[in-house]
Image (tube, rainbow, N blue to C red; front, side, top):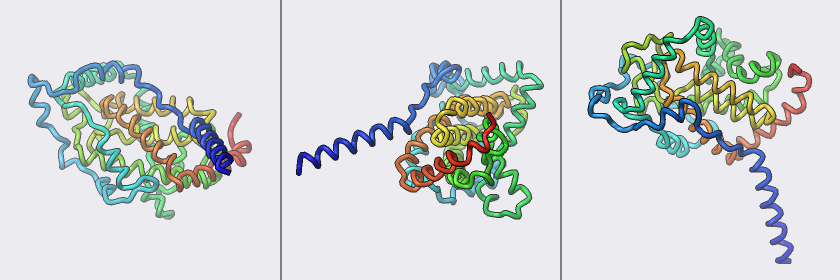
Amino acid sequence: MKKISLFVLFLAAGVLAVAQKKSHQPLEPVSDHYKELQAFSAAVNPARAWMDTIKYPPAEYSSAIVYLLVKPYYLTDAQVKTLRESVKFPANSSDQVRKELDYMLDLQAKRTSEQEKRVRFLGDIGYWPWINLVPSHPSYEENLANLFFEGSELMGNEVNARNLPKVAKLLQGVMQDMRVMEFTIKYTLFRPRPYHLEPKLAPLTKINSPSFASGHTLWAFVQAFTWSEVVPEKRKNFIALAEEIRRSREIMGIHYPSDNEASRQLSYKMVQYYLQNPVFQKDLREAVAEWNAVSPKLVRR
């Protein structure tokens, strides 16, 4: 009897390992200019000590600071705290930041009108959980469309909340966590925006929240990773779209590359917590079942 029990345990462990191998995709290594810029020192450089006195100005705080009072959905409070403490940005005066600012100045000098049009479009995408609570809100439908931006951008406009309510529920939970995580970090670390440190930067817009970490990049990647659990064969496409979104923030002159790389790393850690959460697992199973049943009628070929 004992031998049979041990065999069953080993068999179950093997099945679990296979399941985990299928769902726990490794994070792509840091690459391109993100890797190159990390090679420079992130430590304080006394020659530029004045830069370390600059914080994000309180006069520019937005009402989004209230997300510090919102409870996470799939994450626990303890996980939010652990994630918040897992990321940090290089010192304002560091060689790394100086190189990042120079990189952004070069992007600014080279950006085209076509690039500006595209990055402004991407900059207007955003899902806000509180609007989802008010169906009469004038932005309610647009908000739901933005929730499904990555899915509809890659697979067509029929990939939406109305046709995929189980997928919508999954994404809404993820995005609530994303907003909690974003503003918990921003309003703990208060990193100034690049244009606060470099007067030659002419951003395409200005944002009323601290710079670190990038919210747009966080939602882009946490959704890319989540969508990849639902539609695994499209993972490369979702990652590529998330990459475009994060780079758009640098072209706009509003985020350092280190903001964006931190958000990519952070979003991956969030999904690893999700995959251990029974509520997320249930919602994911239902979303996958819905997708498999409905998507053949929706997705453009």
